[in-house]
Length: 240
Image (cartoon, rainbow, N blue to C red; front, side, top):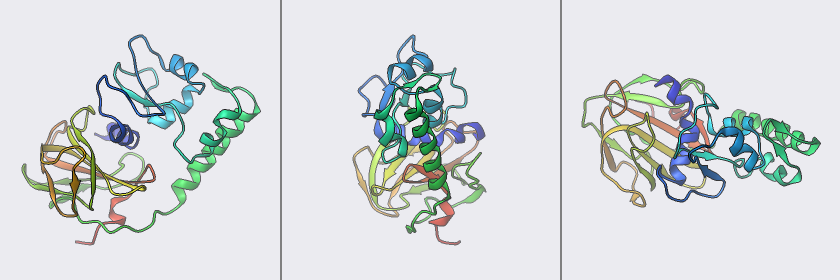
């Protein structure tokens, strides 16, 4: 769970845009085909292995799987997105001063985003239980709440279900709810999903039952994402 949590930020966005499988993917993403390598994908899309590794939170760039969906363009609004067309970027890094400048600007933008506090948004606790693991921003991108199997899991805020399924290995039956243009929440390891993709949910509405799918114990793994970045859920939850 510790290693998998490091990948959860990018996995959430990928899942929100497209479910795993063989269908079409959203613009800016690519589904891995048989015979692909990260080097080939980077070259074909005029970017670098380092960028794809960073944008997707890959622990090992040599381990990609057929059917896996990867981000191949910088997140919208980043400095790299603005400068992507100013120069060709090779597989090993930027080729030319414009590519190097874009990479430096992108890194600077990431640093600013990570240090900027997210606006306040009031949420409710997604489940009753004991918090057995908190957020640290590195090894843990959310919180884990333990309780008995079947414990109700509720929407932390009103929104639309943009992902409901078990296509992301390591997270079991998972839901992702989009609340507005800035916020997503994710609910992993559920026993049963009670809502479907495209459904509107209200704050406090039951959306799942707690379980242990792809987990070694019964718990809910809950994450909050602000503008594509994981943030500490405790900032939005009321004290107990």
